[in-house]
Length: 429
Image (tube, rainbow, N blue to C red; front, side, top):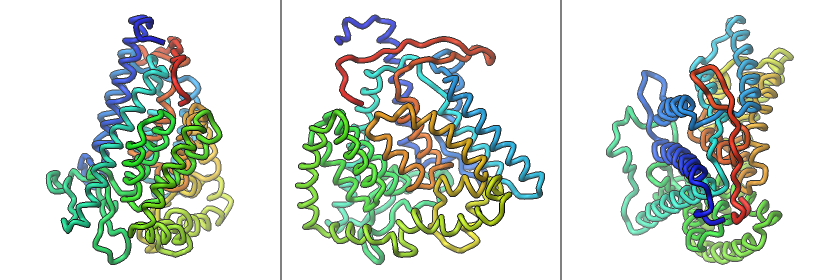
């Protein structure tokens, strides 16, 4: 459909939806290493900005509230808060910061954008791909310069005071134990694994947008320079999903191109590192083991230790305390294990119901959705990691054509149906 035939009101609404979503996505990605220092807590810079902007947009009618998502969010949060009050009443220490972050972060998933259409979605996705191609080029440059004898350094840390930088992450670590070469993080990304995930998602989006091959090559090389499995997982799942969908012809082309790149990469030092990463899941202390094996070995015995813990958990924040007590540095608490040990089976069921209806069901046809959900639930400690959680919410929850929304009016009422706009000429997203 030509834009000339689209009514002005529709085009204006779509433009507003694009600008709103694009601003949130760029802010989230560019500022992910920045925090507001508040004593012991680290508040992500993007969190208050997005929260305040969302409230303003709700008041002005530029955002709506999805009734069904709001119901599931309210139900899940009431359950989690009730469990937390029970834990406090039982004399357990509960992390109030953890509960507050959970409430604020996932409130975003109840939002909907009235002007969002397939055209707006494609524009946001193209912007995202271009951002990741730029970040990927920087990552490849970071990596290549080291082979030219230029030592890697944290450029962002050299200009931002330490108090305003997110701590507790491996922003840049060697590609293997004792190596001099540092994994790429694209300067702005929290860890190489974060860059790998975001670039991997962009790779899958590229396939479905039929982007030029050179963009795929840059993104593929960027994933390799991170020496992290997040992006590889997303790409493999995304390719498999694309092969089963309408983009199978384009996915086959990418597989052929990928095969050529893989053969070329097998002649470089990265090939040996990739082989090591495949086998390291069985090696205690390795990155894969600390994400996929050890958290469950440490946390699940507590979950099944007694009926009360299994049903109600032991309180917000206890998962990190249990891991810290073992002295196992580097072990992450994946979403399911953290929910079970902190809120029990009851709290976990309520939260998963909310996530399914907010992120899973709306995005089921998106080829990148399964990879993002696998990374969210199993690969990363994403429950309270604001960047990872909000990224999933934006790509899987907000990027959908507006169907039925509620406009927030002066803090009381909700109610206005939004029109569904579809681009008949658009590809399979």
